[in-house]
Picture (tube, rainbow, N blue to C red):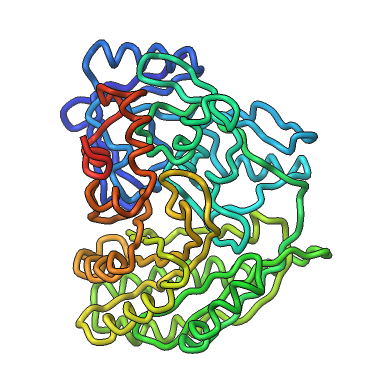
Length: 441
């Protein structure tokens, strides 16, 4: 049965993970089946209420905010089918990635690539363009082979390259603007091992050798610590084994004590006394030592993220990323800004999804973060000016100020997406203020 929660004075306020977005829906519903969800959508349309599906709130934008009906995925979390011959898994849209990854591993299977956390739902992660880093393997949405979409008129459409291909071309990253995704079919492969090599590296060296590192590694990323010339790099490559996960004590020191516990304390100090941040950055950038370990993919790709933050990320043409990052460093060095979070750089091959940040071009990403509760506008605005000067595309689920006028120029297939939206949701049943800004009316 559907669980329904009705909002009222002092009740029903919803906040995202970072705490920077709030919404007060008229009611929240947790349908237990697609049939119940269909009834919810039809009733909302009759009442003149908007409908927004929500995941786990890990987006930093208001893409899922609504004052209408908020659809929670709590009861739509099943793994529907695993087809070993076809190399696919079909899951209900609300399935958390951590549950999916663990279930696939038990079956001797894995996704090819993934982001660096796994708290999100499958539909939430794919609909906003969540990605990891990869020379050859792209975002989670690019691994979708089929999906089911409940549209504004109550129709359930199955979309793939063969069925409704014009919708499939845009709906894999649909921002919740086209309807409610009810299930997703993803490509999977036999479980494999990854060897991770993490090591410190100077900023000048890693930027000079960036193209070489990307070419030589299946998955390369690095973090630069502002106010220093220090970086930490991570290279993930497939391995024949044997598995050699980090030792329990060493993993706790690196992943919990240093990356979460001590880092949380450092962020609190930096927020209270910004003048301490450069010194903290110098210490932090030297705290994590080099290490190498081998494990199954989700245990290498993903890490716990317990320190809460706000984030902005832009995708650039890959050839522009080193120059843009050097501009960011120069800007921070000459400004009064105090930045206590490292800057993350990742890559992705070109894909064929209309609103993918890597649509039609090989891309690299620059992500900037600040500790939750820290004023971020001055820093993010300065970085955003650099990103837009290089033709950057903002991550749909992360803070940015771009609008439809800018985005229609940044995405050659923008009109293809909005045409499908006009066809599937002409009355904007699934709209909200964020979608009005980024997609237009």
